[in-house]
Image (cartoon, rainbow, N blue to C red; front, side, top):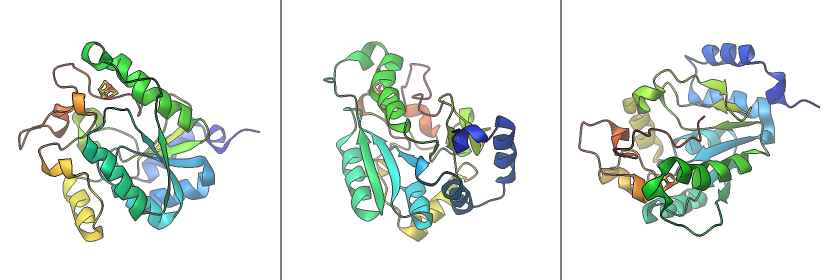
Amino acid sequence: MPSTADALTDADLAEISASFEQSTPAEIVRWATETFGSDLAVAASMEDAVLIDVATKVQPGIDVVFVDTGYHFPETLATAERVRRRYPIELRVVRDESPTDDLWRTDVDACCARRKVAPFDSALRQYAAWMSGLRRADSPERADAPIVTRDGRGLVSIRPLATWDDATTDAYIATNDVVLNPLLFDGYPSIGCGPCTNRVAPGDDPRSGRWAGSGKTECGLNL
Ligand code: SF4
């Protein structure tokens, strides 16, 4: 029997995405939960819990997938624990079980494929759709990101925060006392693994500290 994700054509998804341009994140999450039920997960990087805050107000108990790459900052792992305690979520921490190595020094694409993408892809196999906190304001590469699309896995990828700019996001964080990774206040506006995340000067592209000097801009989860 085809899943809901299969039943929705790419044209359907494009139409749905366009219809959400003026919608609130909560309205988009509500559509996602009503459409996919328990076949829906939230992906979390533990940079902030904005999407988790929005999603759990609509659907307490929702599954949240966090990839522990083995290279996270201690602050990121502590944030994951704070998020687990604060919000009504089913937190699934997934990881590649092989010992950490120095692959990131020589081949960041291969390292991300092994430590991030493979465990994430494996975790997503039980779902038809997933939500991420991706925003168009994150970077020029994300400026045209659809709100709803089909990803390279064939799953429906939903970005309820896509249209939020920094001011709107900051206001939501302040109003709702959202859990944040403390590194955001220490010169890391975009937080990935320790070896691949540098501090960024005020006013510079927030994502310029990720894989600096390598030409890489995305880890591959959002493909
Ligand atoms: S961000 Fe760096 S350390 Fe983390 S998985 Fe990718 S290459 Fe490896």
